[in-house]
Length: 240
Image (cartoon, rainbow, N blue to C red; front, side, top):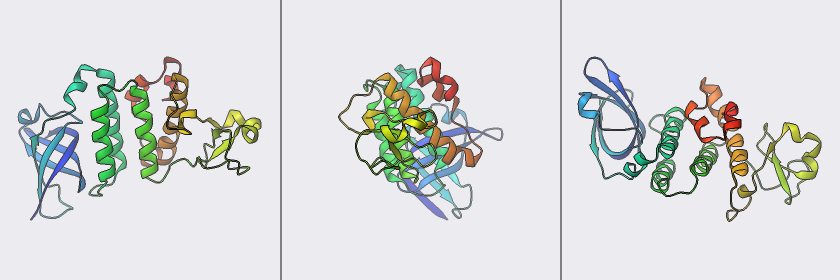
């Protein structure tokens, strides 16, 4: 019998049988874990995104196992007063649930998600938080954009586009003849101190959405979550 105890973020819960619950959590040190728990009513107060302490027990890693949850003081609670910001947590939990392999530890992703929950109640821009985390997750999973130099000329200045095929930056001059086929590069991706206008955030979300769909979600027969459209400008929701 294997027994694991860890801090975790609740990713999903659903009814299992007449009175059981099937839970999936993202632990700090043991990656994603799924398990069975008794009593739906007992777990009704646990919401996606909450931080919990879990005990997982199973005969082997290949078995479903059982999960016991204990609540922790949570930074998630203030988000309940901000529905749009709570959407960001739901979207990020969707990515972690669908894209990270079971049992594979990613403490960097765990800590980043915890930081998102801490920052969101007072952050001036929920779309900025979403775009930053999506970019971070793409990098962690090996699909980050290369902004070091122009893919065509090697120039490190006046980078204005990203190739939708390679994820490499393209300078304004080199990309001008093909601008309609390239993704516009938001200036704040080139300078950490730069402000992000609504237009810049739209560009960032178009880029991260493109590579999430093409490189990660599509091969798994998944699509970008519908909730994501609520964080985009009205005219761009068709692109979500």
